[in-house]
Image: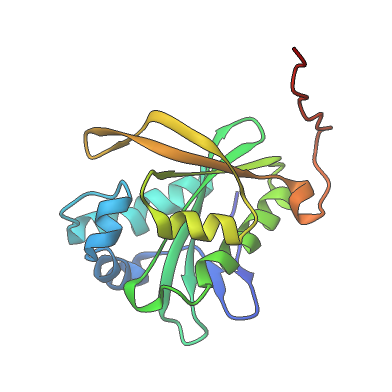
Length: 192
């Protein structure tokens, strides 16, 4: 798929390229981003070059990961967001915000815009969110975006060689008043 550009009231969401290397590299020096995400630590300039020059474009080309830089109208990088295809109809969302722009609702706004796009343009019927237990900022974004927190998965994230428990949640098209590509029949609790 060719990369797409999305806009919201306050943001420009577009893929990243070599001209974004400096901004990505600088943002990824933040210890909080390195702690809570699976990016390399220490994060070297060559990691940023590989991400913007190969990983992001390859993900779009083979429809495996749709990466969006979250930019302000000024062109400043406010965060990064991506949806990685996990199985038929299911994509997993991941995101981070730059230190300077946390708490402004930008990532929640971007999450909703990209999820709407995924539901209407990529035939995704479930956007799944996972974050290591304890990553309260990520969970707050997911909850503000309307994700249903479904529980804890034990040892479900490998972060730099350490298995960790994670929260898991989902957003469905119906949560945003959008149609699904397939019917959905919710389970019912069994009576005893």
